Image (tube, rainbow, N blue to C red; front, top):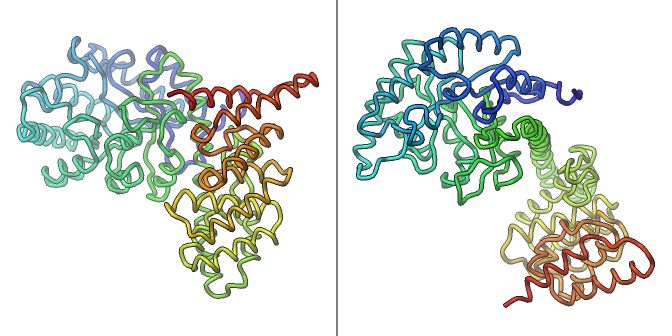
Length: 501
C-alpha cells in the first residue's frame, strides 16, 4: 500500500465518503477497509442488497456489527435509501412516497431512521419519487407533504435528521422544490437538503454553485459525481461537465462540515480502482480550489493597489508567482503546466480580464503590450492567457485589443518556448489568427512535440491543407528514420471529417 493510499483526507474541511451502492460486489467490511486505506473518512450506506436489509430478521445484530466496523475505521456515516428493487422486485424505486399506496415505503424509511439512530448517522437521505401516470402534481404534493410530515415527527423522536434529495424527473427535482416541501411543513428543523452535484448540471437552472448556496445552512448531505447535462447518468470525475473544483470551493466557502460522498452506483465492477481515481481527482480539485481562493485574495489586493498607484502594475504583475505559486493547473494530465498553464498563469490572466473591465480599450491595449515586452517568459505567458480569457468572455473585442493580441501572439509563435507557443494557440488565436498563420502554429506544436490538446477549436479549423502539411512533415521524419508524432494522424482524421459533405 502506498503512502498516498494510507493518507487520510484530513486536508478537506468536510468528510470525504464513498457510497456503498458502488461496492455491491464487495462485502461491507472489505469495502469499508479498502476505503479507509484509500483515505476516505465516511461512507454513504445504502440500505438493501447486498449490505444491510432493514427487513432482515437479524437486522439489529447486523447494525451492531456495522457500528463496530465504522468505529474501528473511524468512519462517519449517512444513510442512503436509494435501493432499487428491495420494496418491489419488478419496479425500481417503487412504491414511492407520491404513490397512492406507499405504506411499505414509509415502513422502510422508519426502519432507516431506526438504523440511523443506532449508527449515530448524520442523516437519512431520501427522495420523493416519480409521479405515477395519471396522478396530478397537486395530488402528488398532498401525498408527499402528509407522509414526510409523519416521517419528520418519527425522526425527531429518535434524534435523527432527514434530508430530502432532489432527483431529475421526480416531483422534488430541484433545491427549490425541496425548500418548498420544507416550507409547506412549517420549516421543521429536522428536515434538511441533500444535493448531488451531478444532478445540478441536469436540472438546476443556475448550476452547481447556485444550488449549493440555495440550500445554504440546510445542506446536510452532498453526493459527488460527474454528469452530462442531457442525461441522469452518474459518471466518474472527468467524464462529464461538472466543475469539481468549483463545487468543493463552494462547500468550503459555505463552511460545510458534513459528508460529501462519491456516488457511482453503476460502477461496482471497478470499485477499488475508481475509489483510488476518485480520491486522486478530489485531491487535485481541492488543490485547485485552494489555489483559486489564493488567486481571489491576490486579485483583490492587486486591484486596490493599482487603483491607488497605476504605475505599480508591472511590479504587481511580476509578483504573481511568488504570491500564488507556480503549480500546474492540471498536475496529472499536464505536470509541467505547458498545456493548461500554472497557478500564476491563471492569476495574471484573471488580472488582465479585470483590468479590461475598468480601463478604456486604447490604454488597456498599450498596457498589456508593455507588460508582455518588459516581462519574462512567465509574465508573457500570463498576458497571452489573459488575452485568451478575454476572447472567451467577450463576444466582441475592440479592434485595438485584437491588433495588440495578434502582435503578441505572432511574437510568441516565433519563439521556441513550448509554454509560450502553447499559450499562443488558445481561444484568441482560434478566433482571430488567419488560417495560414494558424496552420503553421499547429504544425510548430507537432514539431516541438507539444500535444495538440493545447489548440482551441482544432476540430473546427483543421483542414485538408493542414493535413497535407503534416503529412509532408511526417514524410521527412520517415525518410530520416525518425518517429512520426501520433498527432499527425489526428490532423488527417480531422481533415477527413471536415471535408465530408
